[in-house]
Length: 178
Image 1 (tube, one colour):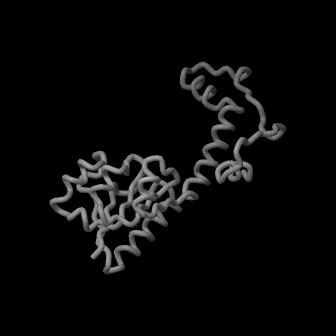
Image 2 (cartoon, helix red, strand yellow):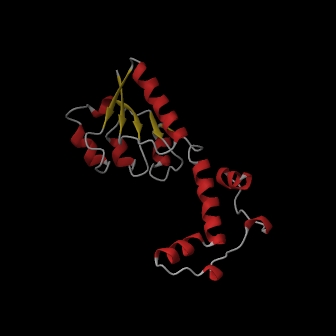
Image 3 (cartoon, one colour):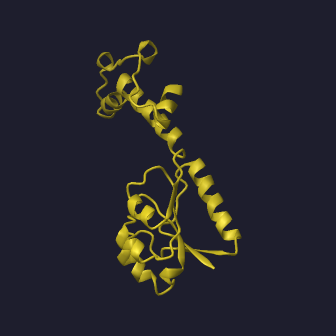
């Protein structure tokens, strides 16, 4: 059977992310061609040294798939240990922790889920804009210090403002829709 190595247990950070991850795990678990292995100590760093320590319980040459999060670096040194690796799945958006050139050279496919955090990020962006305009943090600090300065904390209403969005990618578009 082919081995899929999960470098870190996933947490339900975002519903869409979690649904897609659970769907992937279910597909892999139901397919008898695959076995899923999770790092014995997912709190420790994931690098070539950590993987070598794992080889006693799993032959590294059997690993064909790798699921990694942001803090796990996939570089040439790590890929040297996984000669039969065919696919890397990165739940989330960024690929800064994966050496794409090295993966391309070795014909390893790399997948990600770029839309899973779009709505959460757009919501947070709007919340931060409102925080700045309405001086919410300043008002909170003032109240916590038992010193309410209402006249100094009125802020600005957003309804009469034009908001410039620099970069209309996924998140910028989602912010504009809000």
